[in-house]
Every structure is written in C-alpha cells, then in structure tokens.
Image 1 (cartoon, rainbow, N blue to C red):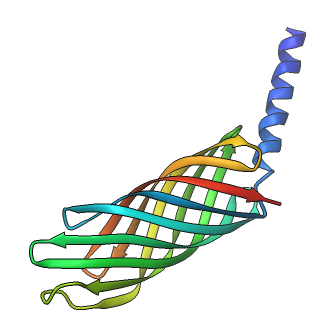
Image 2 (image 1 turned 90 degrees about the horizontal axis):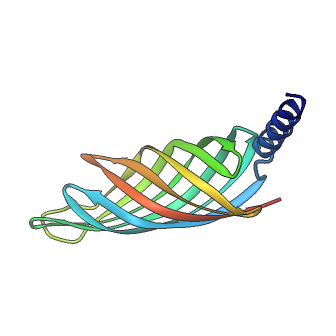
Length: 163
C-alpha cells in the first residue's frame, strides 16, 4: 500500500507539471477537408499563438478554405481569425477549443455569385498528441460562420511549441 501512494503521488506530479507547461509561443499548420453548401474541397491553414495562462491562450491564423461549386454557383473562400483557446493537457494529450472572430473573403467565381466579405464568429475543437517535447500532431474541427451559411472543416495538424 505504501508503494501505491508513492506511485500515485509521482503520477499526479507528472500530470500537473505537464498541465502547467503550456508554450509561450507556438506555430503550426493544418490540412484537411472543408464543406460548404453540400460541396467538399481541400483546405489548409496556418496558426500562431501564445499560452497566457496554463489553461487559456490567444491564437490567430489564416485559412484557405477552398473553392466550392454548388450548381452554377462557384465560391472561393479564405479567412483570417483571432480568438481564445482554452485547453487542458492530460499527460502527452492536449485537448483544446477555439472561439473567436474571423474576417472572411468570399470571391464569386461565376456570374451567379457576388463577392462578399465581412466579420463573423468561428469556433472549433481538437486534440493533439506530443510526439516529442516541442512537436505535437493531431486532428481538429473548425466552423466558420459566413453570411448565408457556414464552412465546416476537418483537419490534421502539426504544431511546433517554442519557449
């Protein structure tokens, strides 16, 4: 019983030290698939952020959401976003959410679609696994609200954690 207490104490210290070790600066990229109005296409993005507290950070990024076709309509989407990123580390596993605003640019690629741009909300969730101390890989879901709908994306990502 004595050894079980020691093992439990060492395990809890290891988890708590990982949770307090959020990066002051991180950057990464994502690739995946986006959908808009029943059409799917490839997407990619880049992000940078900082952990201001062990469980919350600030993040900004760029997404090229892709070119979508819906009948005669053809759209080309890209967006810049900024938001908060609450997270928790469970050993080498990093769970997070994203909530923020994005500035989207919708380019109509056909006569039936007009160009549009504006600000709206975005949110997402994801999980990452630290393969080594400074590198994590994972998967995520993002939702970008736009004027008359939303763009959903499922991605795989890699992030480098500095400082």
